[in-house]
Amino acid sequence: MPPKQRKIAIMGYRSVGKSSLSIQFVDGQFVDSYDPTIENIFTKTTRVRSQDYDLKLVDTAGQDEYSIFPSQYSMDIHGYVLVYSITSTKSFEVVQIIYDKLLDMTGKVQVPIVLVGNKTDLHMERMISSEEGRRLALSWKAAFLETSAKQNEVFFFFL
Ligand SMILES: Nc1nc2c(ncn2[C@@H]2O[C@H](COP(=O)(O)OP(=O)(O)OP(=O)(O)O)[C@@H](O)[C@H]2O)c(=O)[nH]1
Image 1 (cartoon, helix red, strand yellow):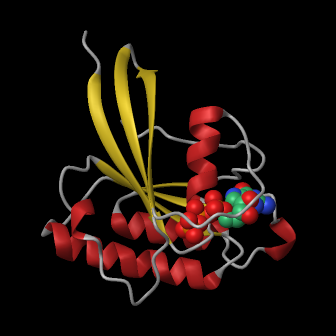
Image 2: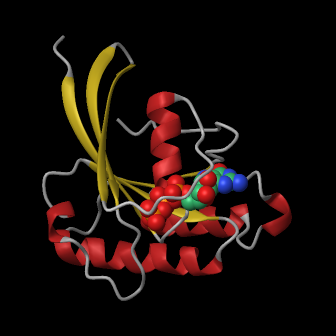
């Protein structure tokens, strides 16, 4: 079967690890330095249940509660990865604001979403419990997982 094309946008507050997760997924390495992203597109071919997929991961610029949802991410995207850091209450609030704007922009009642709580290696600094994350994802009917881009507990499945 020919590969299917899938485009996935990775969104969230600044510095939650969107680029680190993307780089870990595509290159299998962790970069410790912090370089704010404007927009990066990563590509990878992967096989899920005997089907090849050409993935385009759109690593977006960090958003905050005042950001206008970029209209280019409301079309032509198959699914969204919304990322917060388990060490940041603010990033958990922002992911909920992004979700509301996303539904508003796309005009849909439901979109394919994976909610990701990143930085689980920083467990001493945890502010958001797994239960809170799970509950939020459930209310969205989204998938949920916690990860550490640093320890390579990386995800990606909703194809
Ligand atoms: N300890 C730890 N640090 C992480 C993890 N993921 C990312 N970081 C660090 O957090 C900082 C921000 O990571 P980025 O991947 O650049 O975050 P981003 O969300 O892409 O940031 P913006 O481009 O500003 O939106 C960097 O210093 C990373 O090394 C993680 O799982 N654990």
